[in-house]
Length: 145
Length: 145
Image 1 (tube, rainbow over the protein chains, first blue to last red):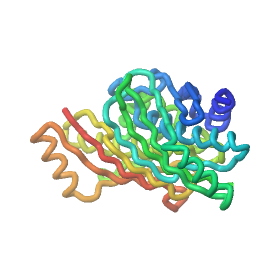
Image 2: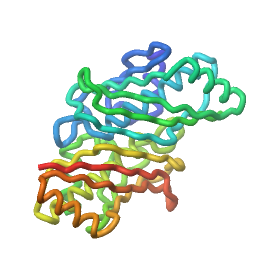
Image 3: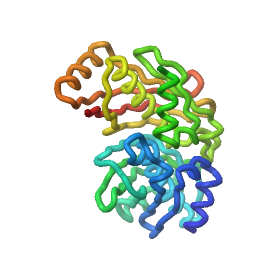
């Protein structure tokens, strides 16, 4: 399933190839994406903010995509609003991990989506600078049929 | 000066080439960047959120860069925090315009930077979907020597 997600990112969002995004790990509760620093350098030889944002927003997007698939469901997933805090520069592989808050969160989200054909979910992604958190990203995603 | 900014974006942030960012207009008070939709499509054939973010964050970054140059100054400009509201899909050329709030804002910012060697400025960028606003971006940028 992770391989499918990677294929979808590359075919449907071509810029992910330039960024070099790869699916690193999917556990059912979390999704980790990574990208090489070389493709994403800025003027300070650390990761460009737009690249960090892209990997973070897609970690949430991908996690919702996988959740829908697990429920034999599908839909249009769009980012509605986000807040991004850049805590420290990222100077090695970009690694973004998005995890659901709880089982209750996903159950509530899926119930609403199945009933109304539209639902919203707020997710946090962390982008790591080695073992420290480099970026804290909060995204509100809307899914509709 | 606009040509210099474009050269700097391409040489120092290579992903801007893949996005296809171009400096459209610099007035002294505002900077408009654009990028072709073709390079930045998502799964819905509208602009990918990471691309919209990149063009928006660089419109603010570039505006601060030009302000420093106008004052024969320089510094490291980094994004510290941002909030991004996606109001409607962008399905034609991505066009991001960032403008200073007022002359007082830039005067205060430059005074602080010249006195302390570090200053912060909050800027709004709008990304247009034809004539409507597609994305509202607020970025807090830190400049240091």
